Length: 152
Image (cartoon, rainbow, N blue to C red):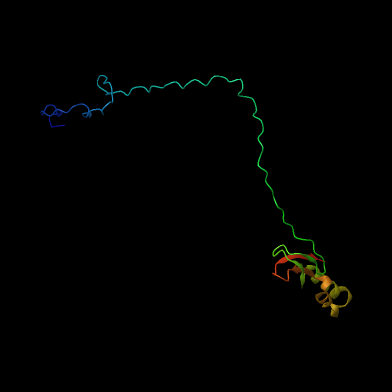
């Protein structure tokens, strides 16, 4: 505003009330102009297509189709005992007599502890040299594969 209290129109400057709008794209309909202010048009909601007609056979269950047969091969460890066993090695498929390796177990330590506490403490070493107090691990002598363990 100038010092006289008059607006820019008094000084000879006129400005259009709204910025000029560009021309519409080819094929585009220009929006209708309302008086003074361009109001947006309400959206035109189209109704969805009607559902397909009812088919009397639509609820019939189709006949079952043959499913493909799946075979599952379950590989189990062979049952082994405290002595070397004659068997087919699952790894190299050779007929072998297993090789045994004995290892101490919890049962071995408990037996030695009981000997030490109740009977005679100088005999605690006996369970460590007796193979029946240890676990027997079976291995293939041909390929060295682990076959199983006997927990005696």
